[in-house]
Amino acid sequence: MKRSVLIFRPFGYVLVVLGLSACSDDPGLTEYADKLNNQVHSTLNLPTQTIQAPKPQLQYPAKRDLAHNIERTSMGLLDSLQLNHCQLGQLIAENNSSLGRLKNGFSRYHADLTMIQALNECIEHPDSTGVKDKLKEALAHKESQLKNSLANAFARDDGLRKALSVGNNSLPKIHVTEYNYAVNALERFTRILERWSYTKKADDPAELIKMLGRLERSNYLPDLYRTMLDYSYKLEKMTELLPEIPQSVYCQNDQVPDKALELKKAFNAIYIEEMQGDIAEIIEQHQRLLMTLESLEGIAPQPELKTYIAELGTLSKKLTDASVHFVRPWQRFYSACDFTPGLD
Image 1 (tube, rainbow, N blue to C red):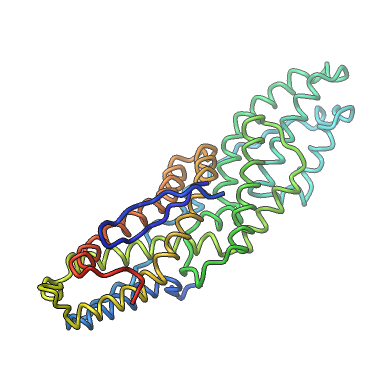
Image 2: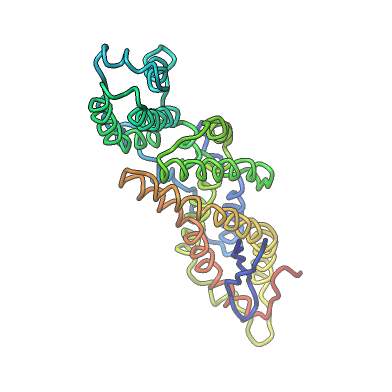
């Protein structure tokens, strides 16, 4: 894995890549940005302007926009009664039961894959001679609806929808254990789904269902995305409000203005000591997700969902760019005063 670390230095701002194995809108970690913004404007005697991030427009598409209609595959009653010699007869009975009709999301997609496997096997069974043509018709129809079944799974499954949705709040803190719990579940789920999608054969769904359950119980990934969006917005807003540190506080003729020392203290204590490390770790956590997001983008049938997942994959680049642009005027200020970041 690659870790992108933002490093601030007196004579340059560089991006170094190191190889390393409900609805309160809580600012969480990004509250540091508000604190820095307020202190800088107070020190410079400027009116403080809010940098509160709005609710992100990036949202998982609504279920109604992603759902597809599925035509039911059926066989005549007399034909279905002639299938006791193969597993298909039992599967038809199970799917027509009250429990079978309750299947939804990826449970329904698994049931459809299993039905296709059973149809293929039953067609080849020597006792299927009398119904082989009708079985082939049923197989062709079922296969034609499989893409719609997968689309509905992406649209309706609550576990995957939550794991790929932007949360209501920023992370209160970076938590490696909670992150690993969620990202491991998403990676394992995706590997299983890839195998099913490419082979059109489904094994025991127990593990996939277990991983979806973990994703539904965790807020970490949604809050990670929200943290990245909020931090990007706040850094961009601070850059817009203060594109350059005023020349009046630059050090000249070996003189160090009091306001220069106050700005240095605030920036070291808040950005260097708190924000920079958090941002680097958030970016690293997101980058581990990139291959999984690319896989899910490739599997998802709906164009609008592919676009959304692709946008979700750009968050670490956006946060990196926002950080770079924010720090540039501070680098020039530190260089003019010969300040050393992080040391008082």
